[in-house]
Length: 374
Image 1: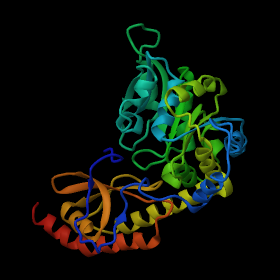
Image 2 (image 1 turned 120 degrees about the vertical axis):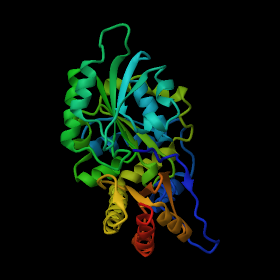
Image 3 (image 1 turned 180 degrees about the horizontal axis):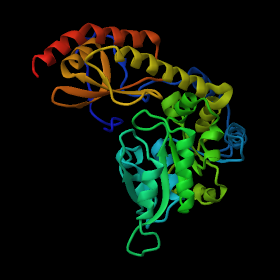
């Protein structure tokens, strides 16, 4: 597996008249019209600062209804802040946070979890599908040295849902992990940057996928799914929320004009916009994967369960696709390159068709060239 979120983006080499079709990330998109309209509405008039505004005050009730449980919610601007600050209340400086080796907190957050926890250690678990597995976690925790002064002390487990491989934890998998964490008296955190995509993929309720399965705290993502820039830390375990307001302030994430974060989150969950956006992204990914799977020289690396596709292409085919105006992240090999294709809330069927047709045009030539080398 590879991390692509902040990897090298191979630029297209076509002329100025080539239309760029960007599959690099769901961060390259614009903003959902509904959310932009909500921001415009929030911009009318004055509002109290630092979360005392009417938008922020409504969020607790709205998110409690969404999750079918009383929750405490804190808006922040970035996923890294949501993850790092959530983990800071779950582990002491001498604690250990267990995560999958390619998880965002381990690979793409520049030490933020370690910094905001005051020095806690990230302990990684490798896997071939982007997931932590309950049996592996149990084995590691049994040997972790709990109570031994020479070792970091197990404190929390962090799951990425959907994972960095584009796979999705099932309800049974989360429940099994939660049983292990509970047995060892650990907290369970969920990095939900693509939480909407996971909910849409599984067709379950947000409650089933979180607190009913044993999750204590959720980093609830919106930016990748249509927001301008808004995330939330959602506490199901109320005891963990007690110091969070101070940690958010100390980190610089207590926005004076908090209404502009909260208005995004409110519009995001109203009328199931978040699920509609995710369903489009997931559907476009499935359609793209189905088309690519028919090509002889293409190999899908993981099941396509959300809105990310990891696929191996011959390098010659990639060159042609870049010239056509497509953009995506790459991890280059000798003859084949693994690329990541990400669909989004506003990805169009025409873009999927264009990519598949371009791949079909060049795939036979690329495959013949590869065959001549082996």
